[in-house]
Figure 1 (cartoon, helix red, strand yellow):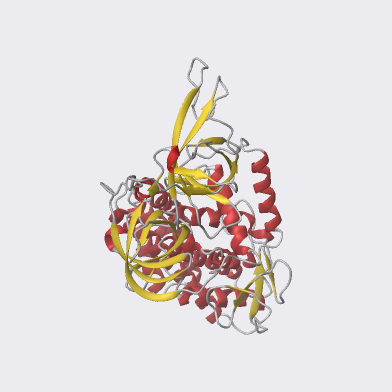
Figure 2 (cartoon, rainbow, N blue to C red):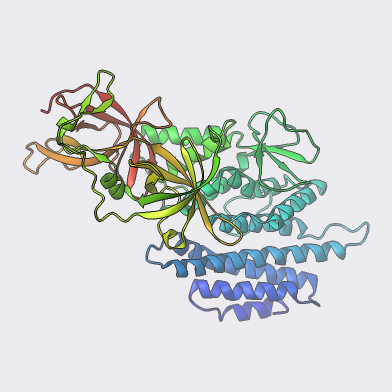
Length: 530
């Protein structure tokens, strides 16, 4: 494989299976990058060919990694390793090419005609390599941060950081070194350890599509809330008035992209039936809107942060996952007489002689984890290896800390792996006094809600289980959990609570998990049972 023609012939014999083909291409990239005696231009040509050939297979492998629910964890890990090996070896190959053309340049010579192309491709490849690490919740390596900083500094010194260039024939538009440099910085700033792998991929597509509108300046300014130090490369951080100035600091942020994202969200809120073909058909409109909201939140001037300090500890904590398990473990309102609605539309349990509130612990799988630290509304935990198959970002958990008889409800918000590949998670507690209740819906005729009406047009009741979150970290509004895709804007349910059953209106979808919808609601005064 000493020239492009020979490489092209060898590539005709690649395995048909994309994962196997990608592993073989990664091996060739390693060989071509390490072999001495190559003509620099021939090496560049071969690396480019392997790049273009491998990316086609990488797209298939990534789709399978993210979306094939039939895969076992071992097979999924094999796909991830194929992707990681390809992007890592490709990044190393382009670095070898750059080193050769720079070392072979004599004083006064014009830059190599493909220098800018190789630098920009290398920046994009490094961003892809970092994304693959994010998909397994592994930290971006110091080598990647250092390479990003050195390559972009080379673009600035060579005065081609904003020069448009088309990197691949299939690219719809030209790009710039600045845009490619910001790919990983903007993705990392969105806190990918708080997103599902599929959402990380969607966020990266948003960044790729809208990246031309991002800002990067030498001085802090409006729309540049984030910082990256070229001299001390590492994770981006938010700019603060106390941040020391330095000539190696680069200030960046969403710029005009923020307004564009808000416009997209507002348009779909006004026209929810309007199709959204951008960013891929494999994502639903709700998934796209939730990721866009997440990006706005973390790219903004005041991203979420811990409200209270975490306290180090070591204690067992019982955990069960899923809406069904939580509904069985928390206090359940089995009939309307067990609770009443106060004048302030808050719920109050009644004390009833001889009646114990039912807790259905039977047949609910309960695991025991180790709690590492805790705050008022959060827990840090170690995840046993056997539970990694279901413990992921967005998983709903019923939690019983040591010493408590009641169960809380929480959601896994952060996930990361340490150097020994051990999994750790941060859980946000979203309800400390949750109640499981039944909601009743009513519809009629052809304009029915959630299939409540019968085919004859007569009235028909349908009951839906829900979790009222009670005390939470969001005291300004009320929330509940419904089965996944149970949310429909403006829908009104009748809650089977108290003598005058109150109605509850669904106002906003806050979050959609694997088996639940988290919804902001408004409680209405009892309107009778109809």
